[in-house]
Length: 352
Image (cartoon, rainbow, N blue to C red; front, side, top):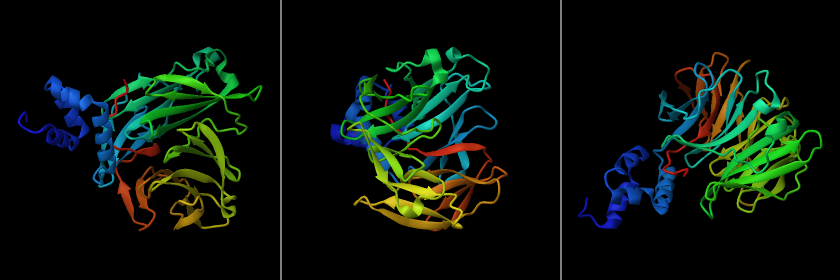
């Protein structure tokens, strides 16, 4: 390898999976320097994300083991790969939720003591960033807005996204005082490794357990009205988008679909189908698909993939992968009482 030109050597490294690179960075100082270089990490991440063979998604299973995560390949649905969450084991009453997934990083909302008889001082909401490929986790609890002394008096909403211009990962934290209705907003930057409060006036109430979809630089919430709420991660500003009139009835879910923001009208009693809408380049809503409701009583949609598929679960905990366009249905094994599924690609992004 020493005889190879540097450009060719780096090109070889860029084609390797994350696990191989993590092993090779201990070969020598030169290899380590290349692999840990920020520009190399970014180039590797772009190549990995664009690779059609990188077809995994993550499933969060809450059944037999607390906070069990699996990576599942769309081409090998019967061989889930277990992922070890490097956070202290959960106990009864704690809850772990996925805020979002972006470029191989997972943002976790870990609530301790929520379902136990504890005082406000013993209840906490902890936010972590986790890279399953490297096994590293970062604790983000040094907030600018501290509510630990009176936790029950506040509602906290979270969002996770990526700023392309600066190649920075950001976590949005919205804190609303239940008594005064005053809302404060802060943003965490991974590059700066710090939180900062931003001056915004936010009059909308967001659900604590509903996390926004991140699509092409913005976070999107369904306000359960006639609008979506949007947060521009780069400019750190809020605005709203009007939904088409045909979608105002029923229950919606917002997600990414082939690099566009989309929503599904799930429980519109007027229709036997699920309408899938996407926002085009001219900011116009288009009804992309209308798919049959494939569920019986006790069944549900677990989550959506940006490739144009969703994962559904029936009352027997059987999971299936359903393709919007072809309407092909593929079974997923083994059975998992899955809380959600999330887009995922292995990443070399470091959290230090």
